[in-house]
Length: 261
Ligand code: C2E
Ligand code: MG
Ligand code: MG
Image 1 (tube, rainbow, N blue to C red):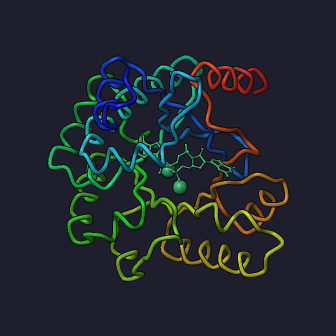
Image 2 (image 1 turned 90 degrees about the horizontal axis):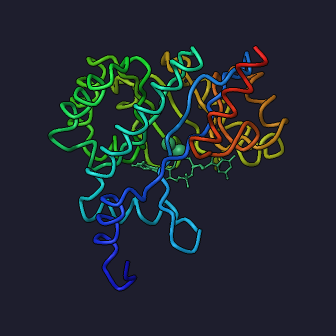
């Protein structure tokens, strides 16, 4: 494919030629150490064996509107994959899918989710959508309406990258969400940085007071994991537990875990 084609055209071609990939990153229950879920993360492999970073192409896809198609593909493919793992490994593995702003506000979102979960008989209770706080806050009243419809389907909702955008605490109380995901920027320097310790502790205390679960992103060290676990953070993901892996490699990880159960 010519690199002179505009990016949105190259993305559309890549999708029709089946070139996009989904990598899966484990989500761990900090009390038990069990892998309880995965986050689906989109990858765009290039000819030279490198990957275009999602930060680049997701933003472009958002601008051109292509994210609606790409996101639908991510949702359908990852649902199919996780359903297969649930059966093969006999586990209630959860699936988290990122929703961009454009997708979130797309008029057809709820219908396409219903279709996707019905098509493969995937329990909506196994599905979680991650919405960044900036997206949720951008049009907060509309967001609440859409969130309610998703909740009515039985799907869980998480606020992604929490703490990096601007959040109105008044809305936080009104959003029908289940979980806050603490951004990796706050996790990186714990337990050494006293400010980050204070921020993370405060987020967890606030979340629990609002009856929300908490998931830490970017957990890379034992010390971070122990601190988070000891102050009651429920879930974590990060290189300490595993990077985002291609599905074949993730299946191996699940097989190892199943064998040691
Ligand atoms: P995100 O949803 O916050 O995903 C977490 C990012 O942190 C992922 O980057 C993941 O690989 C990375 N990460 C995980 N553990 C660690 C760690 O221990 N240390 C560090 N430094 N990083 C870690 P990735 O895969 O490059 O994705 C970047 C962003 O692109 C995602 O952030 C998400 O906002 C977006 N994205 C990825 N796939 C999709 C998709 O299918 N749809 C939409 N709308 N957005 C997506
Ligand atoms: Mg995410
Ligand atoms: Mg995040």
